[in-house]
Image 1: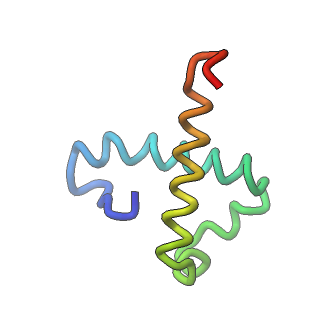
Image 2: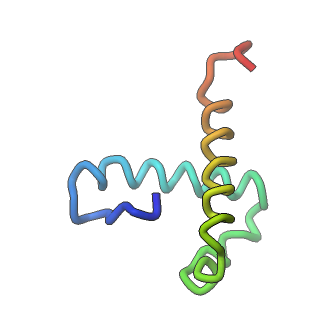
Length: 73
């Protein structure tokens, strides 16, 4: 997700907005609404690449479970 330049490429834009919304939904579910004011560049800059990869893995796992047919997990 960090490599996407939303707005410059129509395919990335088409994917980027729903994916971003899904990531925000995941963050709110995991951390609560208190995370919203922290979702700015200053708060995200100190996060290491390892932490971002871990968070992305958690988000993708959450998304997979959320979208999987009932009874799959």
